[in-house]
Length: 304
Image (cartoon, rainbow, N blue to C red; front, side, top):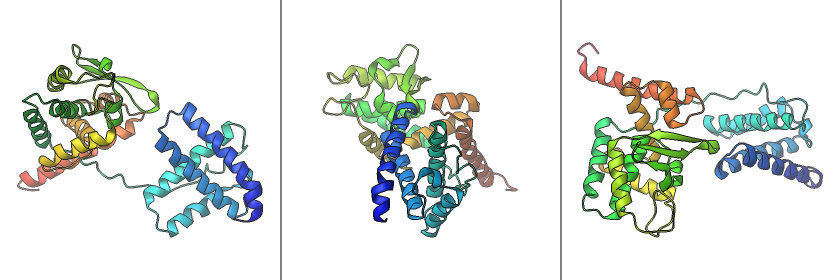
């Protein structure tokens, strides 16, 4: 970067990124991690543009954006990274036009390579049953941590909620009579999700043995504060590894969605339970079910 870029372009870029950061935090309800990723991608693009003569936002054109992506492709960045960064700058330029900082969006014709969507790892229904049965047996003596872990596993699988939603849930969000849990998802959107008898039984036991604490959290750590996502991941990894398919908490969510569809639930219902903004996100679970059908067919049919 030249001295001119540092003294002229950098302060403008800093102000622009600060404004965009405020927009992301105020209106889109994104996590801090996602905001940092968005800002990092836009900052990298603007720095690249400045090195190639586009010192003002209005100077950034489609050729510069294509060159930026091409350079990353030459650096052997993954297709997923290119797709994410392309989507990030398109979101940024759309905001710049809406907020009056640009008249024309240079990213409208920016195309990035599609990523192949890998099938999410899931437990089989038998493996899920074994995992939860083992957790229930471990909690049989009423030891609080074991009961808590059993309840968390039952809730994750029984509702399909995200790990962040589990950690953010409060005691007051549980309705044991109706067997529902109120959670706050992405974009601070609340929804109410149902759970079954096994999860209700585990939650009732957890509420009986839950140590006294000032925390309103549904699930607490050994020190009495709200449990964090790292602790939940450790519990899920350990429990699922014992069944032979080690998963992260999101794998429990994938498993719940897949098993709902295999059991005959419709896509719209699964979409509402999972809190997906788009039905297309939910549709990928039909691919998992199809894979299982093909696998079962190949193993069982004499003409497979």
